[in-house]
Image 1 (cartoon, helix red, strand yellow):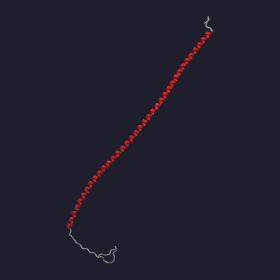
Image 2: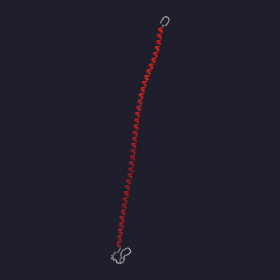
Image 3: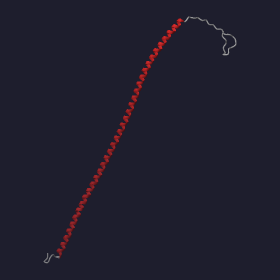
Image 4: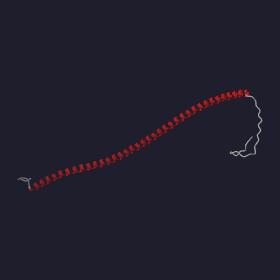
Length: 164
């Protein structure tokens, strides 16, 4: 400092120092902004990676769910088919059982009816034999001597010769 105030050099240096301080403050702000931008860029990259990972996980989970749903539908279809087959088999078995029971009942009815018919026929035959025996005992015995003679005359309208 000079006697009468600051010298021109001092003023120039002071002005330059103030300008440098302003530049330094500006550079600090820019450095902080660049640092924030790097941090934000790093955060954006991390978030994008996380989004990609989450999308891949979501896709995998959706595929697993779809596969499980297909398997369940397939199993339901198989069970439905099995139940339908078992129902058809049970129906066929019931029908066969009823037919067998009906055949047994028909066979028993037939055997009973045949036994009754046979007994009745035997009784009727015995009765008719007894009646025929009694009739034969009561009829007189006749011996007939039949001799025929064919006549040599004109033929009858039926083409036969007349018998005397």
